[in-house]
Image (tube, rainbow, N blue to C red; front, side, top):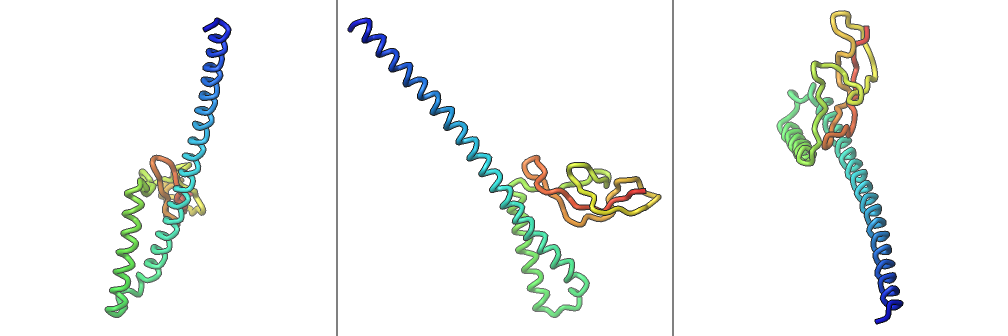
Amino acid sequence: MSSDSKDRGWLAVRHDQVDLIRKVASLQVELSNAQDKARKEQMQLLLDCLDVLDGFDRVFDNIAPREANADQQTRIWIGNFRAVRKVLDNHLKSRGVVVIEAPEGKALPGFHTIVGTEEQPQLEDGTILTEQRRGYMWKGDVLRRSLVIAVKN
């Protein structure tokens, strides 16, 4: 084999290497984009499930004052709906969704959104008085902030 054909052979191999490196880089970008898209879709699905959980909670809050006076069949239905809510809650927990806690009962920036304030001289500013919408974390990230009413003196 002549030196010239060896050089052409090595150039062809080098060209193939460069093509493979470009293809791998392109595939890495595609994979990263697909992973980002999948994570965003999963987050949206979890947020949609949280909306369903909120709906159950609103129903139970509205039923609570009248539940004691409800007939037997209605109480059975309420119990069944509570069981369904618990199943949904357990599925979310098994996927890493957890409730945002408020250490020392104080609103934390980035975790709680203060949607209203009240004066309460006996309490420190930022103390949470009520939670209007529960917040959640997912795999260490805030999935949805808590909406709270807090003290502001």
